[in-house]
Amino acid sequence: EIVLAQSPATLSLSPGERATLSCRASQSVNSYLAWYQQKPGQAPRLLIYDASKRATGIPARFSGSGSGTDFTLTISSLEPEDFAVYYCQQRSNWPLTFGGGTKVEIK
Amino acid sequence: QVQLVQSGAEVKKPGASVKVSCKASGYTFISYAMLWVRQAPGQRPEWMGWINIGNGNTKYSQKFQGRVTITRDTSASTAYMELGSLRSEDTAVYYCARDSRGGIAVPEYWGQGTLVTVSS
Image (spheres, rainbow over the protein chains, first blue to last red):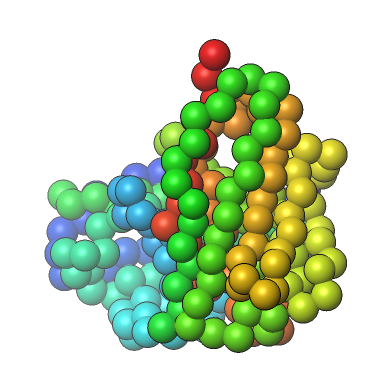
């Protein structure tokens, strides 16, 4: 199965700062990578799919890039509600797999 | 608006089975696939299986093959996930999630989750 490694594990930033999250796949997933945001006690929320397409209702400050094995989620200017855990997920091969997550915390 | 409402929390003994339901509303049920994903405490989400609601075809993670069964009742707009031979490691929140258009295995809308606790 395809293993997704996310880095860093924790990102400590202040509101208004730029966040850059990384997801690396153990083999190429083409552009079939999605990003989710999860807050405590809530279900994951789809942000980005197919590497760079924003899901319905997702603000423009969230953007995704990359292809093959290296992907990036960028939050251009952190809002208070953006502090959460972020997961990547590939759909290139079954089984679908998720990365281990990056926690974006308030500095 | 799209809503997925799951059944309530369950406590089961090792070796038992659990069946979680997921009632959909706000869209045409048979037009979108459904995925089931679980998340143990403090862990990453883990995909369990996928069902084409229209024709009932399923795909399961090999990890759960033989223990999990995903079904649907189109007349009730409800999907089900049954997991058998439960062990303590199956303690987790179980989510149903509606797939994106085209059945591309990108869960777009999620249920609220069902906590399943396995304990003797």
